[in-house]
Image 1 (cartoon, rainbow, N blue to C red):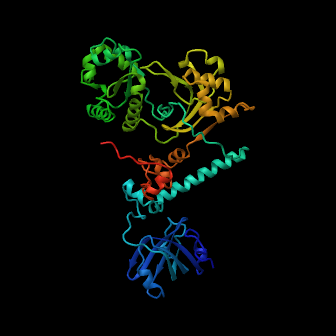
Image 2 (image 1 turned 90 degrees about the vertical axis):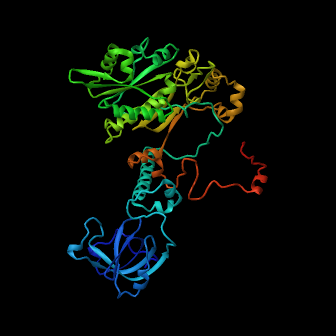
Image 3 (image 1 turned 180 degrees about the horizontal axis):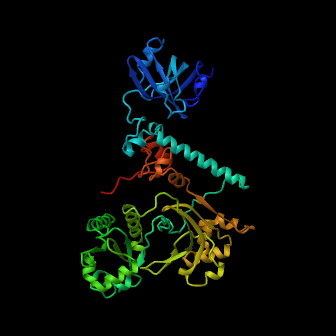
Length: 486
């Protein structure tokens, strides 16, 4: 017989009654019923109920078992009484009477977290004792799903003739702003922000009116159907303050018995005519609200996007029962700094400009790149581009952003040299496996689908890393650690 098992903990059925079997796993749950000890034995595949009575030669050993002991047992399969059959388990028709046992791994002290049940624990505890956390049912399900998703992706690609190859990693830093932009709309949320600048220009609300006198500014409205209560508006105002803003203007419409009334500080400042024009533009009515943010779009779009998400979730407007995909295309390659007027890259500087060399002769802000992202439910799942593989176009593209040919060759010489020897047109994309699995698992935190993730401070709590380097290690690398400035 195999050293650890003849069957897994999901294999045994009524057809095995009378067999002598060997199982290995963890003590999932232990119960003592009148001197008979019942144990749910768990392995990666499932659970089998095993039991031990005083007639067993290993009864004294079994009595000492506690949760998460790892054991190997030999025993005889017996049928459960009809009224004791557990239809929720594949092995629910049988139980195994223990006749021999070996402790493969004992538990020292109290468990820092319980594997049985669905108790909530702080993330710090879960990451510190990840080897226990991974035994829990939800984590087992998520990690198995991740493995299956990766295997499915590989098989589908192989079936279409793709192969896996190693590719070089660009370790040189590149001038791009893509790490600061946000292009992942959640199309499950029906809320559409609208520009309402005309209704505030020259109005009695001086904050917005004065703001609109500055170049490049606008006022946007976030409609909130069913959000027309002062309590909800106050919650959203608090949300804006938590995001670092002084607040968020709002108007809500209510029925006063003799007709609809617009309420809120903005309504009082801009008057009934402008308020009514806003309501009609947004298509709102009694019981609805609208929230307003103003300034240069790049300064408030992040907060506005998060506010739209919160409004959709809290008011039950977002359809949480579907996946909503969106291709994001036509990325601008360049942006102009509002303060200095300098041109720099806004996204991937190595993507081919739409229109090639001719496009680079026009206004830089109008140049679009062959770049594409795939978003789903507010998360970026795939990002890619068509490579700018023509050196002359690459040099021109970089020169617009202030990088001369010599600097490009110095920083990206390996790529430039490769493109001088018959490089074909090419492109690709990278999929965020963690995000994809997170959505499929219906989780809100990416760390729920990664076996050994770091925390938000890039620390591995389980391994206690990073740790302080030793002095001899620093000397070998000719490094010196300076104390923080006081």
